[in-house]
Every structure is written in structure tokens, then in C-alpha cells.
Image (cartoon, rainbow, N blue to C red):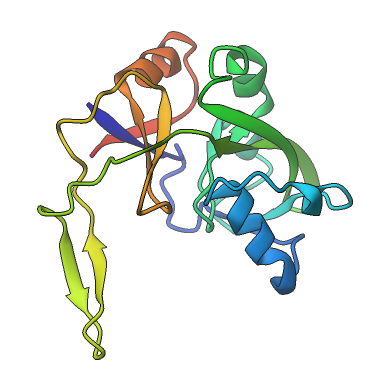
Length: 184
């Protein structure tokens, strides 16, 4: 079974935006965190800073173990990383970041997903067609025949999409992390 990570805050504005990377450097960020390319030089002199939108506040952000991000990266709490970093070593690398919420800086970690697996069933997914004839995936359908011997992975082609497995779900439940899951 595959699942989507969800923030536990039920508010459409419970999202964080990358604020420390200038537009000219965004391609390097995207290549490293989403495409899986190994050039992390751009991180040597930059700190990753995200800004929380109104759905998060100083009363709830410290209690949450997963933050939804406007770019397709998972952001986890210090507690999550401290407990699971060794267990998830083959699946994810954790890079420290700051999240600014109500003018207060909080420590979190961006999860750089290391596994790339074909998760999407292209034939069952729905597409829309651009005027030039190019088809864009509109509604992805996750495959039911994926070998789920991993915790978390990105789709090997639709790299903006990632999912976790029952193995990860069990760990989240075992440690009572404040993370919601949606079956996909």
C-alpha cells in the first residue's frame, strides 16, 4: 500500500514556502532535492529558510512532525529526524532548515528522497492536452503492483510525486508522530 504524507493541520493555508533561494538558484535547488542530482555546492553558502503561511502559527508548528511545502519536498521535525535518521538512511538524507512562523525561527529538516521508483500507473492516470498536443498528467494514479520494500520514494518520471509505504506508516504510528496519511 502507498500513502501520501499530510500535515495534521486542517487548513489549506497550512503550507510553507521556500524563501531563502533566489529565483536564479532555484534550478540548483530543484535538481538536488527533486531530480536527485548530487551537486550540493549551492548549499555551501546558503541556509534553507522556509516561511510558514497563515495555516501554521506559533501555537501549532512545534507540535507537528511534517510540514506541507509548496515545492515537492517533505519537511520533518527535529524529533522525527532524531528518532528515524538511522532507520531511513537508505531512503532519505536530512538537511537542516529554518521555518519562520509568526516571526519566530524553528528548526526543521528537508528530506531529500534518495529512491526513485516507478510509482505511477501511466495508463490509469488522467491527462490533459495542451494546445501544442503535449499531454500533462492531471490526476496521477499510483500503481498497485509496486515492490514496497522501501520507506519513501519519488516516482522515477513524475519526480514531483512521492509516496511512503506501510513500512513507513508503521514507524509513524509506532512513534506517535503528528503526521496524517492518505492512501493513494
